[in-house]
Image (cartoon, rainbow, N blue to C red):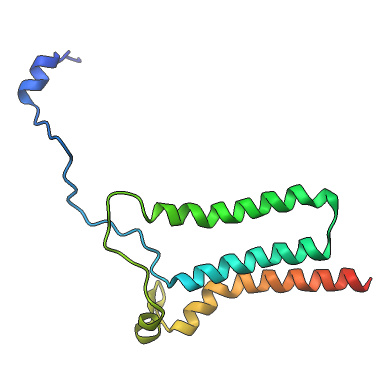
Length: 140
């Protein structure tokens, strides 16, 4: 059975705080240097630029704008999320620290070069795919 608790009864027993106390440390950094994220966004936007320049058509203006907005939102929203309250002490790792210490992954510690390759392999392949596609279209 349920029992109705009056506001007065709850107020007598409750502990009311003016502001909640955060008892745990929050880390919303993505650890890797910002340069890797900037390179990733640059390669994705570069792919769109190559495709827009090589296969320019009035019918592709709206899809290219939409894709660009998706990329900017896909990387911009997490950037905003890292700056949200509560404040945190976590910061992105510097490139020098990554080179010195590497980074821990699920399969073990990897060097800076290996981490950069893991992060950038897909954006580089997509950019090269765009260049190849435009080249083939230009030759046909």
